[in-house]
Image (cartoon, rainbow, N blue to C red; front, side):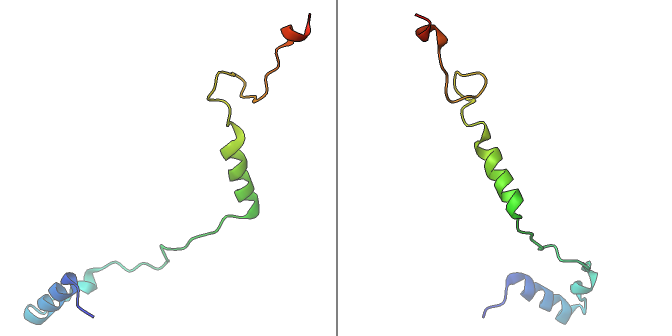
Length: 75
């Protein structure tokens, strides 16, 4: 495989100046790529919150999808 430009530069500095730039790097004692999967409860809560207020964007103020007008049945 081909070398990257950064690797070529590092090798050039090491060869010509004797300067190893990898020594100046900070060492990380923990993994920065640890990913935790959501639990079943967290997945259900996310789905519940996602669809919880589905109808609030309309004209119905309380977010209820079903609206009954009692004036029609009063006759």
